[in-house]
Image 1 (cartoon, rainbow, N blue to C red):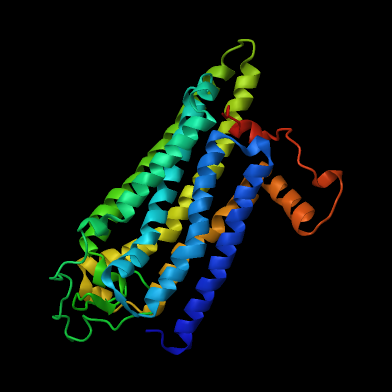
Image 2 (image 1 turned 90 degrees about the vertical axis):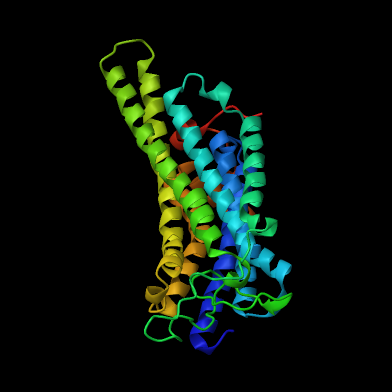
Length: 356
């Protein structure tokens, strides 16, 4: 239950981030729809990521605030409120993985890339990713929900009350406490979601493993690109200059997209770390301040706010299109400088793939 000014400050920050996440990521979708040069295989995955971030602001954050109230809610609706953010997180990871694979193919087989990664194939992959995300995120509905016995309910921490923290004003595993499982109960994350699912299946299997795969892919991208560029520098084959420019652009784009992956890890790993402490070391978890846990939750939601900012800062074509949308459609300024053009900047040339 929300108590004290700090708890209401948490709600205020969450609501502000929800608004910013929705507006910023709608701008990303608008930019791709308005500028044909942004309709590439890579950017379709970024649009999927933006859709997930819009849903975080529109649904997941309000659901989180609802759970923070610890209202008496039937088990299945409560489980949906708790698990929906897991669906969106998984979709974001799959989108980032799709971007990494797309960039690797662009560098390693750049001569065949445009024929291999088409807009239709990218959209098909995105549809499959979303189906898998719903299956993974809603797995607790299939029976892997909170068990009757709680291994992490430890009372031998010197003070039996310290091992069972009072409910905190946030919905995630870190900070909730056990309650009897009834048809209607206080809607807290740990009442409906099993921590073994969160740690072993969700975090280690579906979050950390893809992040490590993406790390390996981006290392491979830079290694392959460096090797190709070295070969071109030693070659005098006609047309190598254009290939060299293409590869350099691909490396530049890959660096920008790797920042997005790093930002995701920066925002989400602290919360998963606290969840691991909660499961493996409940006595240590009992010493964690509630403000630290709230900060970890806010940081995880801040990921949805920060992505559009990264696009604007790191990718020129997005930055130009954002500016044109804001000035032409929001501020209602007119002029040739605010018209969309489909000429390619160096960034859009690097990202362009044949779309269907």
